[in-house]
Image (tube, rainbow, N blue to C red; front, side, top):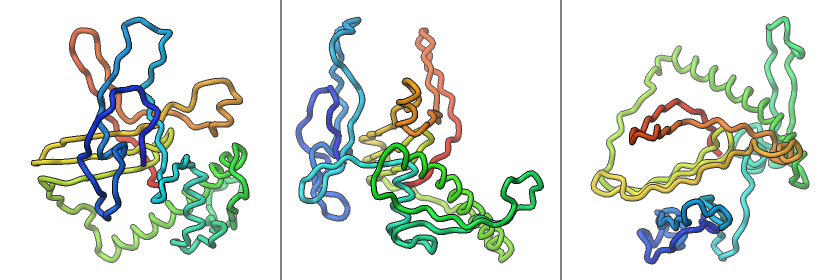
Length: 245
């Protein structure tokens, strides 16, 4: 993963030459990234300035790609990987269970199949979002059944003590409500030495046609930081939800 197209001062050297698998890391990889701001002159609004990061995927051959994310990407990867019984390699086939709710529009069990599209476009992203809701309900239902079965069998342990290492690296890539968010961390002597984050941009702005192209993604932040002008930083944290890619 590379970081390009961001206005700030460059840097030399690397904190990490290779990843844990032995692959060489670029200077622009988040584990090697440095945040050196290049602020513009105060109230000079006409000049270009941005804090936005533009992530790209670099293959081993050096070629750089734009990455598709969101429900379509999640459905696509699940379908093609054949890591779950519902995956056929070209589609996802599953059955939504029967419901006892009287007001349900479709109370009976329903067979559902999402087929991988031949082309990626705005319509396919929206279609994948609808199917993803159905697939999420299916997965959640089966996980609840598995959890109940484990509890009945006496497997009630839900937490394992974690000993924090003094030195280490970490990466977490999840899908928040408004898109993909990624974190890269380097720890030394029990403290965070470097922390880089790629957060999603709000996708709810703009005219209706733009919202359609962006697949109606809402923006729900997990944390709120407020500076009241008197030197007091107030912080309110809430538990957010995210789905792994």
